[in-house]
Length: 88
Image (cartoon, rainbow, N blue to C red; front, top):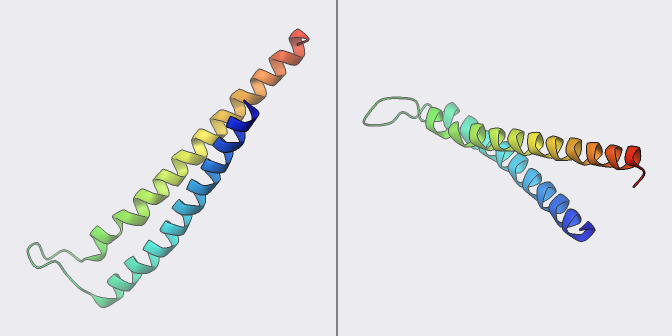
């Protein structure tokens, strides 16, 4: 189970790096579009608004990943604590 745990940790780290990198890069793209002043032809809304959904979504995904990692670490430490109390 230790090998599976290591794979799970690496997987989460890779995902977190990817998501944070995407937040950074998509923010640069969104700011670039915002500085251009481009608007959508049909609706007239500024184009930075739809572009902002990318860093927002990626940031929320990163937040959720961190939240799940915290929950997993907390459950693991609880399990270890119970094992120590029971003498296992």
